[in-house]
Image (cartoon, rainbow, N blue to C red):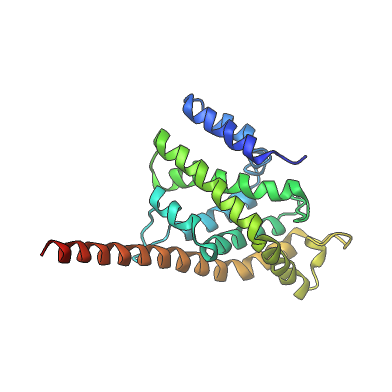
Amino acid sequence: MATDITALQSSILALIQNGSDSIDALGQLLSPISEYITNQQFVSGLNQVVTAVLQNRDGGSSFDVEDLKLLSTDLGAISSVLSGILIMFGSIPSIQFNFNSTACQDLIFKVFAYIFLMVIPQQIGSTWSVADKTTVVQLTFTIYQLIISSGVAEELWLDIEAYFIKKGWCGCICKGATVTTASARMAVFNKNIPKIKIEISSNMNRIKDFNRLKSTIKSLEAKMDTK
């Protein structure tokens, strides 16, 4: 059943403000993500996407709310992250993903919220403050709106379908086709995820580099103005 994303956003924010945003409580709101995390293939695929998001040019890992703000305004960076998520969904037999379904579009918001609220803080060994969490939820909603309004998700999903069709395995995700094996689906994922991870990491570093450049220019201009 489709979810009212605005109402879901409000419910998540209410939990955060009340200090009731436990893993279990958030998991219930983000269902079926809470069920998917018991699937090792889902966890592994998601971790690969998140690792690419966090990876810096020096090989280290970092991410903060300012990085999320940058991501939320860059459709290219968002698209690369979404590509990783979509091919992960397409590779898991137990997940019936039909992009034309409103419920599956809602799933995009839920998985992004899960990544930013729960997975990333755990991977970077940090805890979001209440203010940070509030901003994270608001920016996640902004990202979701941009994905849906731009139509980029549907375009990417067609590309993902094409990956499977090239191998004659369109039954993985295409309605009405015969069901293929889990190993066939994983073969498609394993072949394409390295390239997608490079795109994610490159895009994240690009927007960070550009932001640093803007900050440097702004600082230099400020110094010039004081002379």
